[in-house]
Image (cartoon, rainbow, N blue to C red; front, side):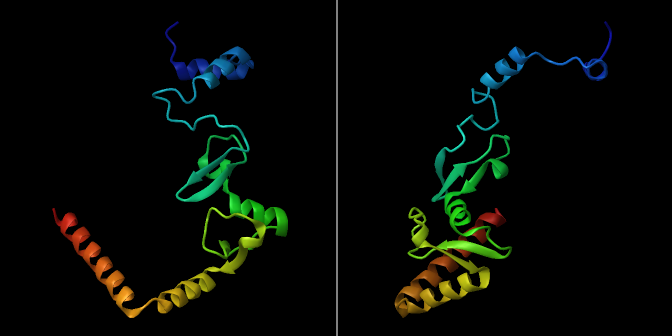
Amino acid sequence: MNRTVGTLQVMASRLGVGKSSSHEYARLSRIGRKGDHRTRCLPIGHLRIRCGYQERKIANTGLLADDWISEHRRLWEENNGPVPDGDVVFFKDGDPMNCEPENLNLATHADLLKRGREQWIKLPLCVRQAISAARKLERTIRGIEDEK
């Protein structure tokens, strides 16, 4: 026919011709196979652990940021309404696997920094010095690796 794929797609669109539902079903059944880089088709409501936090799938758009929400944030919004801009939901006991509503609290980023500083001060001096030395060593190692 001597036409490009793009030209044929435009012509099909103008005529209102599309792919059949069986074609769409076959395309969706390939998602998740080797070589396919799209998100696996996990059911909505699926709970996963990512970076130590529980996340629940709430949609199936294929966009990770839109499909998943932190379980603790979801539970907070379910029980207390939306989280205001600039605030975060945190765990009272510090355990991100404990998503009970009684264990969740709301704070600003500044409050969290203050809370972390207070916990840092409570550590014994020798522990603080050891942590600081370890961080300094890590920065030095990273600097040497960057020079290579």
